[in-house]
Image 1 (tube, rainbow, N blue to C red):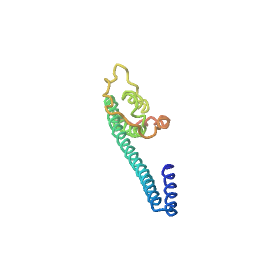
Image 2 (image 1 turned 45 degrees about the vertical axis):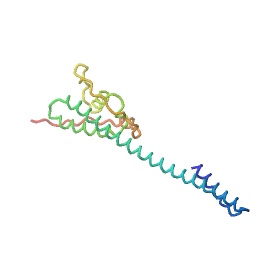
Image 3 (image 1 turned 60 degrees about the vertical axis):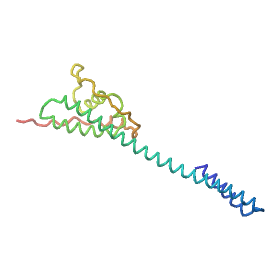
Image 4 (image 1 turned 30 degrees about the horizontal axis):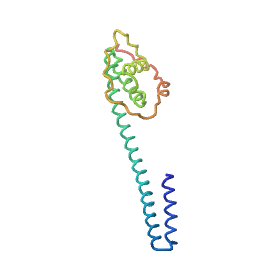
Amino acid sequence: MRLAALGMRIAESVADRVDMAGTPAEAAGLAMAFDRVARSVRMTFALRSRLERDRARLRREARADFADAAQVRKKQVRAAIAARLPASPERPYQLVDLDDRLEVEALDAEFLDGPVEACVARIRRLLGLPAEEAAEAPERLPAQAAVIPPGPPTRAAACEAVAFPAPPTRPGPS
């Protein structure tokens, strides 16, 4: 912005001097200088506008890439946890709680950090599910294929601080 302001000041100064030029040759030289400075100012504004558009486009693309990667991670985590939930009357409620937790976790850029297994273990803990034994842990889940661009600001501390209470005990079939 400073360059554009300086260019405008020079252009105004040259324009004023054109009116006071003593000879037509001097006026022509000043007019040419004005034209060059004015063109530089226009190019500065055009470049700034282009950079702002490019920056906005890159932010949109990064948000879209983050959202896509978060969807993949949510599916991986859900599949890993759902596969280990025992068949019980509580299972549908646990799946709803899992889906709710995944929606909250997906808002945090750190949701995509680290291996899927670490995310699975953290969400199991947050949902109050027992930790998996090493012998029964599923084989390594497929790694995230895409490079994850920077996403929205992290809210890890806030998400970790908001621990969901254990679901209330629901009466089983009598």
